Image 1: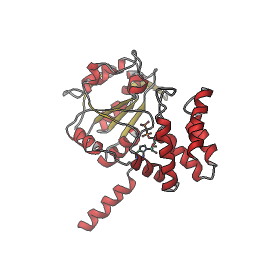
Image 2: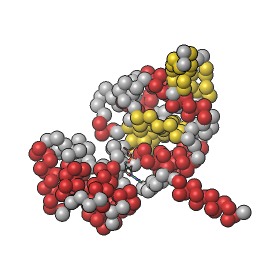
Image 3: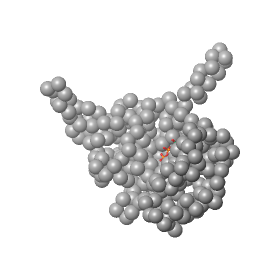
Image 4: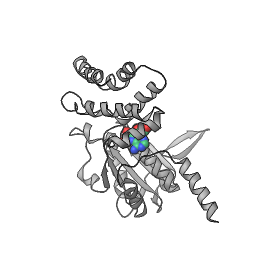
Amino acid sequence: MSDTATASDSAVEQTLPYYEPVGSECALFEQAYQQRLPLLLKGPTGCGKTRFVSHMAAKLGRPLFTVSCHDDLTAADLTGRYLLQGGETRWVDGPLTRAVREGGICYLDEVVEARKDVTVVLHPLTDDRRLLPLERTGELLEAPDDFMLVVSYNPGYQHILKSLKPSTRQRFVAMSFDFPPPKAECEIVARESGLAYDRCAALVNLASRLRAMKGQDLEEGVSTRLLVYCATLIAAGMPILEATQATLVEPLSDDQDVQEGLLESIKATF
Ligand code: ADP
């Protein structure tokens, strides 16, 4: 009996999207899920927020509905709309409605980008009522216990017109993400790219120097995602300077002086 349990547990482990924890974020996520509280993840792009959510959704055995928000995204894109299908008009649920009906996790990435009417839908879902009113169908859905709302945003790019209002953000349990500490980041980059650990360590070391340039000339520091790209290209046989130029210089800035500054740092490392 216990053998079966162990075998199926390890099968679940194997199908989990790989996520390297950097603190107690997994426990906090689980608590928020169990207590039916919505969660807000803050942090720079490419630092592991999306991977974290897919890992946790798989761990909790819930379907995940991910929406990358953009400035044309409206409440109807989340809730659903009537569509003409085969000569008939049919209501089609949006991802938020599906997550509520099916008891899943709805992840709204970069939620501040969305249109303002989205907050009107989120408010009744993020207090103890946990309701989703669908005006167009006349339904009032009550979220089941296994529904969870997770949103993220990057405080780095916020300008005054696009930040979460206190009345919205104070409805969420929140946690901050940042680039993983060096040891964890080496582990992640090595595991994701297949490049040897010590070569990844050199890249992580370089990243910390490039990140120190943030603010002076750069809007954002090099992300873990870009480090994984860089290591992947190197593992595939690309010369280091070419790989770093394509992943750690070009995506970061269009300014020639800034690019030269980054390249100098890179050449000093390799
Ligand atoms: P974000 O959603 O914060 O923009 P992602 O979750 O898409 O970033 O992370 C980008 C990439 O970085 C992932 O695809 C993964 O390769 C890697 N990554 C970052 N942090 C972690 C982590 N803690 N564990 C595993 N992979 C990570």
